[in-house]
Figure 1 (cartoon, helix red, strand yellow):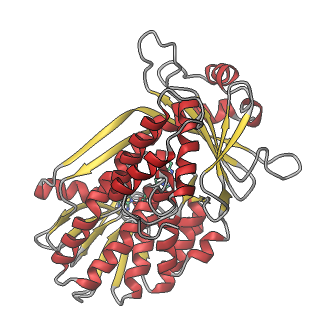
Figure 2: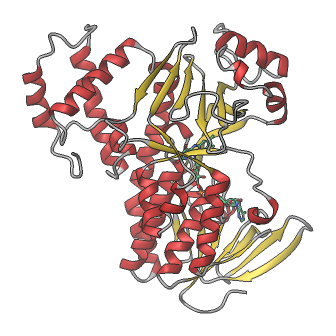
Figure 3: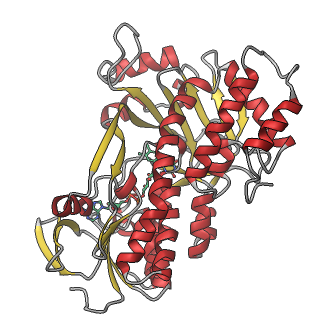
Amino acid sequence: MDSNDPRSLTLIGAGLAGCLLAILLSQRGWKVTIYERRGDPRIKGYESGRSINLALAERGRHALRVAGVEEAVMRQAVMMRGRMVHALDGSTMLQRYGRDDSEVIWSVHRADLNMTLLQAAERAGASIHFHRRLHTVDFDAGYARLIDDRDDQPHDIRFQVLIGADGAGSALRAEMVRRAGIGERTEFLDHSYKELTIPPAPDGGFMIEPHALHIWPRGRYMCIALPNDERTFTVTLFLPNHAAPGSGDPCFASVRSGAEVRALFQRDFPDALPLIPDLERDWENHPPGLLGTLYLDTWHMGGRAVVLGDAAHAMVPFHGQGMNCAFEDCVALAEAMDRHAPLEDAFAAFEAERKPNAAAIQAMALENYIEMRDRVDDPDFLLQRELEQALQARHPTRFVPHYTMVTFMRVPYALAHARSQLQRRILVEATAGRSDLSGIDWDALARRIHAELPELEGAR
Ligand SMILES: Cc1cc2nc3c(=O)[nH]c(=O)nc-3n(C[C@H](O)[C@H](O)[C@H](O)COP(=O)(O)OP(=O)(O)OC[C@H]3O[C@@H](n4cnc5c(N)ncnc54)[C@H](O)[C@@H]3O)c2cc1C
């Protein structure tokens, strides 16, 4: 039972956002109780099986910094300087993400990160109850029913306020939809993914360059690999669920057996094949993961309940921002709760600030799939990238590359999206019909940039 203390809050989900929010709110004097569906990963090991590692960028790091846990997380992180693009002929090309090693992203292990955050949440004063899956909520009476999946036993609790950090399949969101019709819509992508593993080399080192995010772009599908600090790589293969008629593309409907996936790798990813010794076993044991974008009209029900992170705005993973955005949500919610009372006003202010930004990163994540699988090895794209870098060097406070705004800065996503669209138009128009940058009218471009792109705060 939760107390009647008006400063008590009940959080659902001790995943990434739930734990970080618990730290931030406990530090502010809230009495936080978390209920988590799974067992304690510190005792029984982590039961995720999905997206084993994640790219951590500045937005996420900033939130960890605010909570005082950045250093502990960064101890286990592996730096990724850029995309290592693997062509079909086995040649590779490193495309740096930023200007130098101050502009990089970091691969972090989901299980290690979650355990670091759980530990810190408990140290900050939150109490965490495992094996408690939210089942149903009576919002009027302030009762929730939780189930222990080990014995199917119900456990009823009383609550003042429920905060849902219970991920893309949020049970709290489902209950809010049932009670108040908060306008839920999920658009599934017609592509899914499978995770495979590259083990350490026989000498205990990494099999391929560790400080990069590896991509094998193949038009309508692709493979990526992120390093882990135990010298392995997690490989994710993204394929359509069904191939376009007549395309001959591989798809989950046609590549089913271990032998079929081996044939696919032999044809399309020959340099990756020898790196994945358990290819067939990984393939047959892991079901494909679904990818979708979740939209909600409203994220809160008065001051009684609110959702954040994937529970409010799950997105496709192609910008590596889902967790980063969820962490930004945590800081925004904690700060809105500092600024506004009653909680209804705080939740409304949080939603007003974050919803347009979540929508923008959801859209950018969808756009980035096309870029990653189809454009990173395209000559037009490479020329536009060259011009983008040249314009950044000439106008560093105005022409800030899309990836820089999203990944290395904390520019609101919606602003980053709007500026990126404008910049993309400039890049496409200025490079149309060209094969190199000779003949570019730099003065005309400077005039256009000064007219259309105001200086961006924080750009250097
Ligand atoms: C393939 C893939 C790759 C990704 N790569 C990246 C990346 O590189 N960078 C990045 O920033 N993001 C990435 N993401 C997105 C990222 O995983 C999510 O955005 C992030 O995990 C969201 O955090 P969350 O706390 O909202 O949800 P989750 O991490 O899903 O946590 C939800 C928690 O709630 C618990 N729970 C669920 N239901 C209940 C219930 N009924 N009762 C109680 N507890 C419950 C769960 O057990 C879990 O602990 C990726 C996602 C995928 C699928």
